[in-house]
Image 1 (spheres, helix red, strand yellow):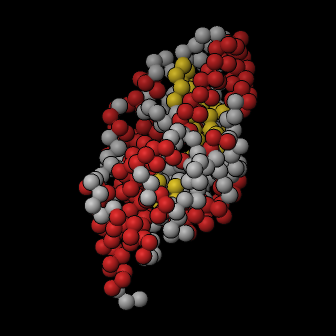
Image 2 (image 1 turned 135 degrees about the vertical axis):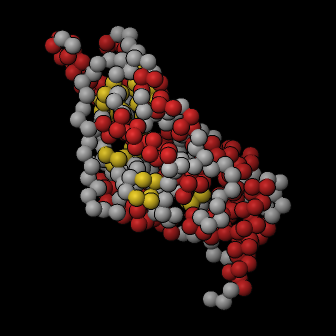
Image 3 (image 1 turned 30 degrees about the vertical axis):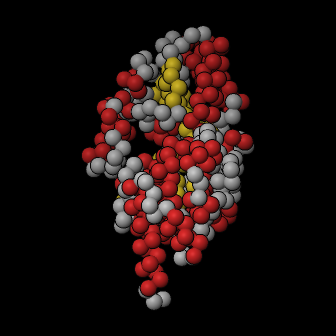
Length: 360
């Protein structure tokens, strides 16, 4: 590359970061396309079958770790992050500590992030094209075989913590990631270095002990996997450990000391809809399918469907303190046409019967 071209790409990289911040991204970084180290880690994870039923993690072969196979010509990746934290830590803890509260992972309380980030990435690509001319690119937001956290780490946005989430020294981990694969030879940023030190708080706090070792998560035990990715029956041994979490889990982020630097989002689209941050289990268990579809419109929650929504809530109700109202709600769904829902309702009722006959 000539000196003039190198200078041009350095200047363009700086402009891209400025444009990204103007579009609402909190940080923009640029990485090369060599993900060989991440590929090794991914293959070891897959070999241990830690991906569970997420067959898509291996379906695309090396496309996930070799960007040019996914988007021909890719030599650089523009990585962005956007804060989504909608409320303070005390509010989150209050909801998690209330056994009758329907706890939903805080990333899913507002509008589906996929659409918002993708639109912003497209606007960023348009600005690059307007400034530089036509170029090859493709934008991604958790929608294709992309190693987004490994890319973000290489681009200097943060390091992958022991819980496998990306952590930023100045912003914690409550943020979304997105990427633009490109054929532009942009100047790259220095990769982030790890700063977890001796801390093992996330390993200790995990309700199901899914973080089996530092930097190793067995998805088959992870509550996010169990309540979102898993289509069938939740293993009985793990149900009591799920507590009141009906969609995802935030425990490893809540406990992370770096999240004392996290900032509340300014994005209105990420603010809670339909009081999803304060809903009670009995209230959401009473939703009809039409209610569910209406109140999760434009939300990431809708992807699990009404059946798994009821499955998850039945488990949470099984874990809640016994009350006449709770027993009545479960009994009303005892003959639900879905075998999946019925199984979990029966389990919850059985658990409460045991509680009522077992002396305290």
